[in-house]
Image (cartoon, rainbow, N blue to C red; front, side, top):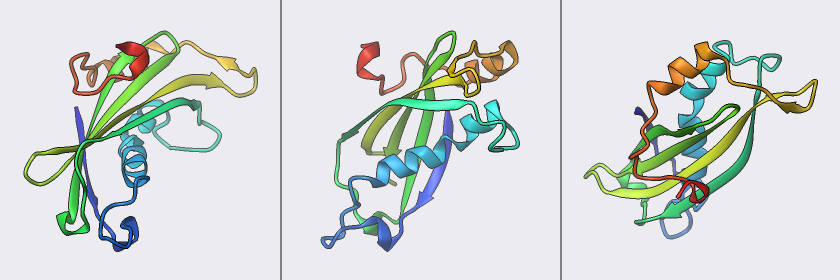
Length: 142
């Protein structure tokens, strides 16, 4: 499991002080940077080889600006030949899970316009974060 802390910004809220419904999607994407770096440590445009093909997000609790900080926990919930599912949870300071979600991504050759097999060296690093019992799995996995 990877953890990432997000500082809430007033920009993240609506007029009632609740975090906007897109907040968790943005926080989860930011938390995936560590996964992206496994595929391309330089995070270069030329080395980019992932496409997002599915996204899910479930809200469990209200997130208010007064929380000030959210902990995002990230897991690999499925590792296939050319695809992976990354799952996330947004946790409040008291440990309450406020949102869960996940994405399916494909390791992709943009020149050939087709999926590629994830190399063994990358697979080994991803396996360190694989947790098939994590709190969220994409609906296609259930």
